[in-house]
Length: 252
Image (cartoon, rainbow, N blue to C red; front, side, top):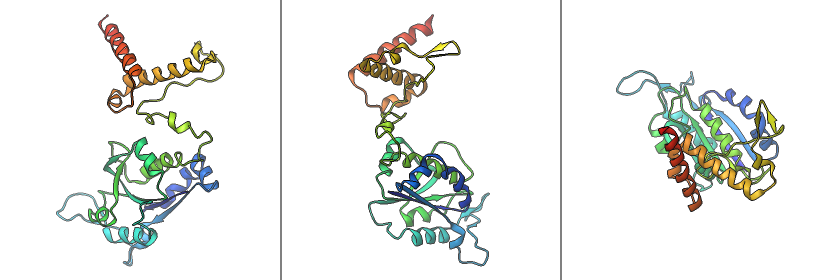
């Protein structure tokens, strides 16, 4: 089981998104658990203040270190264990990838800190040894939506959560490539037919078609991924031929 402890100013945001679909089924199956902790509950002043003006001036507010550190230390007593990791959701963090998600799915417990405002006091990640993680090169109003994304990405990689144990290995990004196109019944719709190879029953040809479609789609949509993808000689030969054909088409 993987347990997610989420530290947030808005714990009510998580009930809906995590109460349905894959994460909900995983919780009912005892494979995943999660709990949202209100950071304000760990502020010791009368008004439960969790933010303050930044030293040095400037706009916006900064989340205070004291309630955040107190919250995580109070809830996650086993932070020193190698099976436990503290993550800070921030646009300044390491990019969340399928490879990182797979590593995180092997942890027993993940503590997710949701930043707000201009961010959190720099001493928070230092004192908690929190790893900064980003879900993309853009800015959200807070880390809550990012935490929900991370929870689903990691949860579906926990053994037993998906019905097909091999399903996650064919997902986009799992092999460093985008996933191939999918078709289902009917074989023809809107004047467009599913590729004959998928109806042939020839598994070797289907595999080859899917692999080449993944390579083609990645080259056209995310060519940067090919530098990191696991490719064999047949893949490289196909990409070289595909690049030549695309160059010829562009010159016509």
